[in-house]
Every structure is written in structure tokens, then in C-alpha cells.
Image (spheres, rainbow, N blue to C red):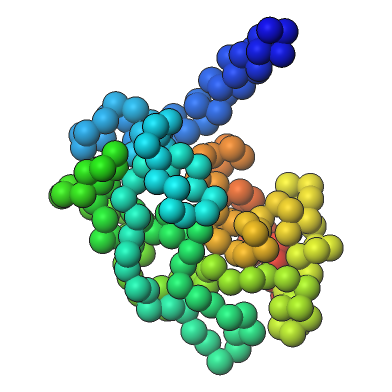
Length: 201
């Protein structure tokens, strides 16, 4: 009983802080006019969540099935594959093929993203869903080693930014506004600080 009360106290204290960080940001989905007054519901649900994608806690939104045209370059040393894991979840709104209100089992929405629509061609966007490790940093010569390179958040690149050793959308973008950045970035990019966290230029 004592442990249960401690957990309840933590939820009461921490819960509102986490909630208030999203309020008023671009990811505050309450009052958008497409079917909910809840901030979190378009992405998350406590019941009947989609468990088909790894690292997608309590996922509630229709997931994109797009085959993307990927970033390519003669100078890239990484192997870039189709977006996976959390990047696929981001693109489930940001590729413009899935309606914003397609959550909770709805698949017939008509409202699509306007600002932040990346489309299905990712050739002019930063590559995602690739393994960023010591071997890649060594082969590239222009990247910091994620195992030892540090970030403004206080840890290594691997610990602070990578998801399962991969660079994903959420490596740079702060979906839940935990770092209280108006641009929803994990690290402010003034003077290219975010870029220079990984790129040794």
C-alpha cells in the first residue's frame, strides 16, 4: 500500500508538469476542430493501442504505409533505409498522406497537415533511420563518435539523441517539448549548435 501511494504521489506531481509542456505547442491537439478536445489522444491511447511498431507507446494514430523516396548522396557513408520506428510515427502526419484525425480506428479523415508537410520524397531532408555508430563516424571522418561525443544535454550523442543506435526524427525534434524549446528541438540550433553536436565541421 505504501508503494502504491508513492507511485500515485509521483504521478500527481510529475503528470501536470509533463502535460503543461505540450500545452500551446504545435503538438497540442486539443481544440483543433477535427474531433478531440484532448491533447494526447491523436497519438496515444490507454486502451486498444497499436503495438505493431517498436518504440511506439500506446500508439493510437493510423500509421503511414508510404514507400518513401530516400535521401541519397555520393558522399554519405550511412546506409539509409525506409523510415522505421519513431520516424514512421512522425511521418504518419508529416508525410501528408494520412489525415490528422485518423486516430482511434478512424481511417476516413479529410484534414491533412499543411505546415510541416514533408511529403513522400525525403531527398531534400536530413536522412533518418540509419545506424549512427563509431564505425560510421570513423568511415565518414566528419562526424563525432556518438559513443564519446557529448551534447548540450549533458550525455553522449548515443545516450541523448539516438534511438536504438539510429538517428530518427526524434533525435533532434522534441515531440513532447520536454526541453521547452519553441521550435520543438532538443537542442537550440542558434549558431548551428544542434547540427554541430554530431557534425565535426
